[in-house]
Length: 380
Image 1 (spheres, one colour):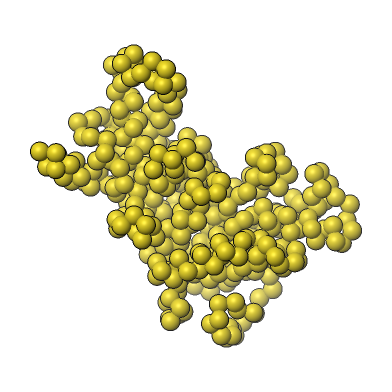
Image 2: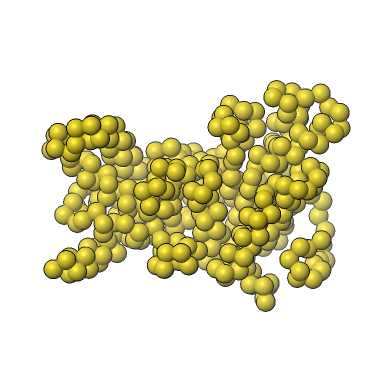
């Protein structure tokens, strides 16, 4: 039953939530980047169309805002649909997401035809059978959008761990003998049956972004370990970066992608990303020396590396459309070519003369130059 008080759902077609995965000959084989317009993601850990992305992060580092920005950007750029499955979520979070989406115009309650997103919820208080089926229901909606409209569909799951948790509760109720750590004996099969349905076909693609809760921070726990095997890219949100005021708080050194290969992204993109990570890695290794002895003890070369790394770190921040209500600055989407050329120039030292404040919360390099001129004018 719909829980948004929007009246009954009028539907001409029904689909079973248990479907076989597309056969080999139906699947699309080429790897293609899904450009999100978010600099740090597109440059360092790009998403694949029809790929599976894991979003790792603790409470309050910006998972929901990143998910909403992705929904917003895909709706704008690709005019595609998004499906959000709240699996074993807190009711409060689901309610907040729904109202934030209305505020940011992703959902239009007065004109549902124009809304770009469908929400499916099974909160923590629901019985395990309902929670286990929410992810499958959301996936079936995403498959319908893909097959009927032939577009790129974004499928968000928050949280994929709760899908496994619900499955283990159902398994216990059925009296099955548990496997490692008390999980269901069919853990890998259940996860595989769902994940294999998330793929690109000749008609269109389903790209999934899955928030992954890691119990007791133990990455070897069977539940997160089983989902790792299916992921194409991981986006790690870091509390240390969010404390610096850099949003999105994506860790540029921890996030990975299967697409980061010169054969897929091209030589230039690969080299720029490699150089950016190299500078940030060097800065990270120098931080102990800076903390103990200060900047003055560094060699001239290391001082330059630190200056560039701090600029890169700030340049990886970006104002979001959906966060405009908090920040007051309008959101920016940056084309991939601009992102690559901007970072290439920063790494090469072409903008060493600009203050690092000019790189904070802007889009492309043109905005950096404009902001630097504005800061200089204010100081004068």
